[in-house]
Length: 379
Ligand code: PMP
Ligand code: GLU
Image (cartoon, rainbow, N blue to C red; front, side, top):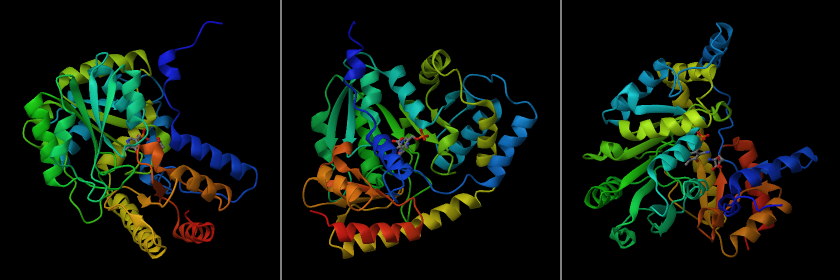
């Protein structure tokens, strides 16, 4: 048989999804596994959002829609961006995608030529590098300071004439860090001085605890060179709906649109009506979920610190990023096999020596998980 694609063979599977699949298999076998591996809100999608989707289904919104998204949703997103994210955005500068992940993939396909370099700040979420590889780009990694989790001038050493794009993810998955104004300005200056595009993944923007979320595109002229990624999975507990979006200059959206037309065509029509309700409806549900995550966050960080583990800042998202003494892969494997707690080793995020624990689980389950981890131990 002829060899399958070398490019795809060179891509690692998604560690977050693989570990979660393993935990689910153990659960099916009757083992009481506590899954802190996948970043997924444990809440149900709020009722008014579900109802809007059901209404859409019942009135026959079951056909193809405009490929970039229904006009009502494009307008709701561009209004939200102008108001909350504070950069100019028209509806035709938005594309609704099958999850934020799809927006990242389409953005890379649209922007990159073979060999173009993409600067990735590590620790980094698992799917950026594969999306760059699929678009034939070349990843160049830059580790952020592992005490402050902010940027400094050392990033300039990674920039050269082939640098095409930088990926920024604040609040960060996996570290929970939120970039301050200085770090964001550093990225903006770098992009403007060296003519670099930015992809700013802001999917955790609503989950920030006592810090300010800054949209990269709101700084200077950055809206002209930034693909802002966002979605509904985290803020509105809509992971299974597969709805995300990108906002970018029109020239980029036009190219992303071609990738979308020839791959998934569009996001699901009736699901998009749920998203309209999410953006235009009462935002109280978002605040309630954030408050609940904040309680869990405080509990987790205090408990981990009591047990002697160092932790990253945990100012945003729903992850505790924990420093371990030893091989993170081996420790994560023991926590799963002996303690039945599924977590994601930092090595999957280019941060060996760390482990990511999602606190998107009930306080009771988190307490049980902490007890089990303490019993198994960390080295
Ligand atoms: N970006 C980050 C940083 C994430 O953690 C996730 C979670 N899956 C995504 C993008 C993609 O989210 P989704 O495709 O569910 O919208
Ligand atoms: N973003 C979540 C995580 O990091 C969901 C899984 C995924 O898409 O990677 O666990």
